Length: 239
Image (cartoon, rainbow, N blue to C red; front, side, top):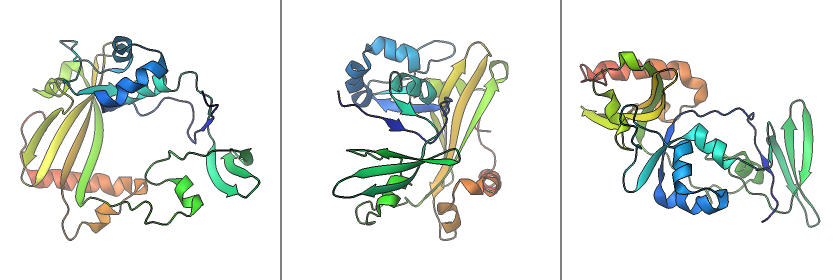
């Protein structure tokens, strides 16, 4: 029962409406803190097959919707939304963090600061930690990700197979691996949502793709189309 405040740069709107896979050993220890039993936890966040209504799971893992998981995890937490970390200072007598909130700067004193802001952590950058402490290596693979929502009445043959296990469905063609995984099923709108991935080992000329960032989205779309064209004819539902 340690008092804590979470500072989040995004808005309170639920985003990330896609599927992720949780290991049983990851979510089960959380149930007691969340004051929820496992059946209710699964009811609220798990992805189900549109026709059989079975969970997308196996004996070790569970496929869940990330937005639904976020809704459960953030319940009753003190979250300060739209607070972007811009500076950290510490001395023998005080510690403080500065957040950009709209057009203003707000300073918050702290006794313990925990940065959970990912691989491109602003916290780590502001603390000027040596790279040897966090030696992040980019695996030599090119990966394209995308999402699609498809009316149930217009599903390609075999697509619902991705709702039968957490790994979804895969197809290897040439040097590339294609994967489709379940995101969610919306019974009211009769829409199936999936995520798809194309991955392959990187070559000598692929450094620009390895160094890409979100600002390159337009050129990445062009690269993806070119990658798919090289594959030629693929089977359903990857076609």
